[in-house]
Image 1 (tube, rainbow, N blue to C red):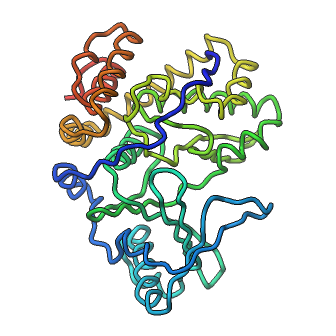
Image 2 (cartoon, rainbow, N blue to C red):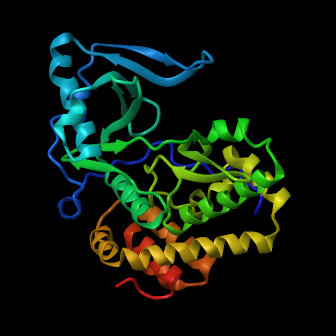
Image 3 (cartoon, rainbow, N blue to C red):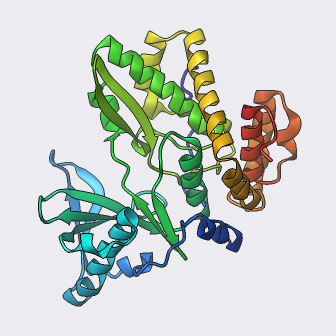
Length: 349
């Protein structure tokens, strides 16, 4: 892997892009657009908030919010229904023992999400989902993750509101700080997964995968652990103009993973893992061929990044791949389309 360039940072404030009617039609066609009883703006009617502190006494940058009794009587059953809609297609029978345990609000970052904790009163087990503003960049990011990665993504939209299921895993920054000192066998598996994750992000142009924007799912195996790195923030789907911002190994927050990779892998091994992941992506493209075509018919006419960034990224990709097709792209959708066509060796249509 190349040495990390510490000067590369994403834009501090990403522009917001509304969901166009064409994208809305796509979401309706594939069951992503559903009528919801609660909108993002409804959750902003809290009257009190307190900082949420973790078990170690550290500020989480989230605030727990509180509503008056009348608001809770209307809001909480609707949120429980949304959870049932997401997980059981609205089966009302599962709602009897579910309730809202807590709602948190985060002002850090661009999306300002609400996190809703749903608790099962029969066994005190809990789960979460997120309520956000439906930004088109994020919707494209979620859909591409669902189609091109090994992970199923559960989300629904309704007008200007986006609901995302919680993606379980250990936060990347916590994992890097606390879990790298393990057996050599496990370290090699971690390095392999980071290379594959790096390749997935690059091929579909998902940016800003610093350690706190992904989680690590750890599965115990016969002779060690299996690891899968999963993106949890899709705010920077095809937005930035710098090519390096789509390669997680260039972020200083991921430096320990990069150094671990340098310790356990050579250039030949890295190239092998990259090719393995591209082959898997090619297989996913073939299996989701029609849906991807429908998605790109919309994405290739949409604006999800300033034109200046589009031309910059096209120029850098043209130089990187020695392929001038990227210079003629007029928006980010066209760039992602051409990149994926390059991966599979032919046009997607």
